[in-house]
Image 1 (cartoon, rainbow, N blue to C red):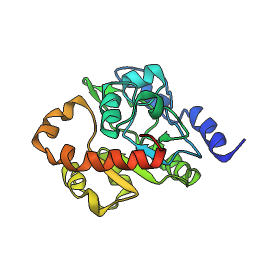
Image 2 (image 1 turned 90 degrees about the vertical axis):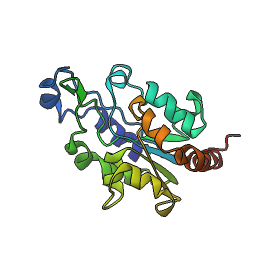
Image 3 (image 1 turned 90 degrees about the horizontal axis):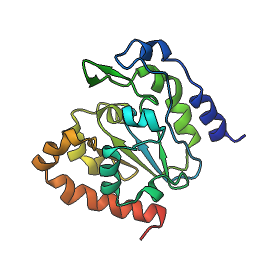
Length: 198
């Protein structure tokens, strides 16, 4: 088995957070959702799967994923082609709810798996840092998401910080029209150049 395949197998059987998840309102079992690839030129570094992704086992299989695909200018077939796009969230399992809100990604996941996964995917040419957790891990000293995304040109071209595509950020998008006017055209051009889609 190749390095990516071996690591993917180990990740899929990870149960480090079983007790933590059992103690949440959802009392769910671990279900790691990370799509590694030794071919994909694009890596999506997100936060953690939500409840819908926990149920389906498919990353970004929810309205946030629909918005992210729209931002990237790709359809589901392209998005889920692992020769084109890999997905490595900061935590691989749905963290659960506390008082109806998503819990943060458990740090033990990134501490255990993240560097090895990144090392195994050395072919990646563009990493999309989706949300504050990924930005803080990948960009030393990263501040507020708005500031990091606004300063996107200073961290590229191999890295692009993005706000989380959640419906909760619709007001943010309306308040910051420069994101759709400036960042998204660059993102879509770069995606097309990397995966050969027209």
